[in-house]
Amino acid sequence: MSTEPFAGAVSVPIFVVVSLFPSPPPGWTLQRGGFTQQLAPIQEIYLFEGVMNAADYYGLDELRRACAGFVQCCINVDTVCALLASAERYIQYKCTKSLVQKVLEFVDEHGNEVLNLGSFTLLPQHVVRLILAREELRADEFTKFQAALMWGKKYCDSNHNITLKEVIGNFLEYIQFHKIPANVLMREVHPLGLVPYSIIMNALAYQADPTSVDPSKLSPNRVRRGGQGRSMSVQSSLDPYGSNTTLSSSDSSEMISSEGGTKHSSN
Image 1 (cartoon, rainbow, N blue to C red):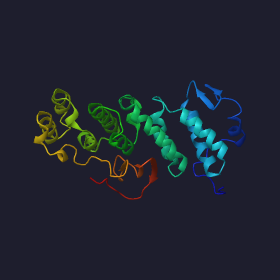
Image 2 (spheres, one colour):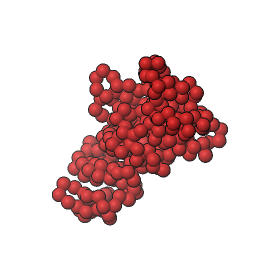
Image 3 (cartoon, rainbow, N blue to C red):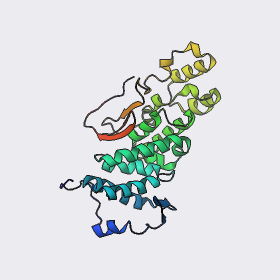
Image 4 (cartoon, rainbow, N blue to C red):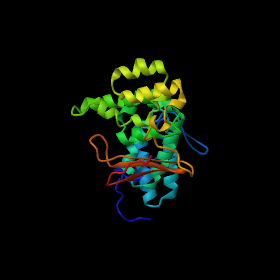
């Protein structure tokens, strides 16, 4: 049990923390095996997320398990983006890694729905890249492009020193344009002038004759599976629209760590 101050300590008196568990929080009912969600106030989720990490830090296993169960029950379409964003404040605590794993698995299963959320545009750039790069993500490629486009527009609204084309360029490697129907490519994507002509042409050529295009030219920097299970890493550099926070996945666990330098995914 650590005796050092908890860096992400929640400013809630201990009697309030203890009182959270004898009776269900507002909008929740207590059933055998834990809390059952009726309504998930996001502020309440933030509270439990902080207490969960503090409990883990101080070795309060029963409290940690109760909080973890509560927070995991909160994972749904309405809260998934907020959970990913809020997890960054606790990146140094191991409980957050397990939470992010569960959240990303939910995102994988509900890809199209999550990518269409307005709250998706509020995620940090490196988190957006992580989601779009996941091979497990169940989302069509045009929806991925639209999500990147909406995120880019939102970013440019508050950052006038960078063009939308520059921002979108950070996501193109994670979109398989050859899987977007030709009519959609020509009517919806190409006229925007955001995707290099060579990418559009390679996508169209592949659809006409897959043997005519080198597969490496379709998504040259796309993260691929390694020889041993799932291996994927998306690491942000200290760029104008990123941060030095890293979310990565290696084999069976998702991890969030803080990096001081720049790393790039290998081909």
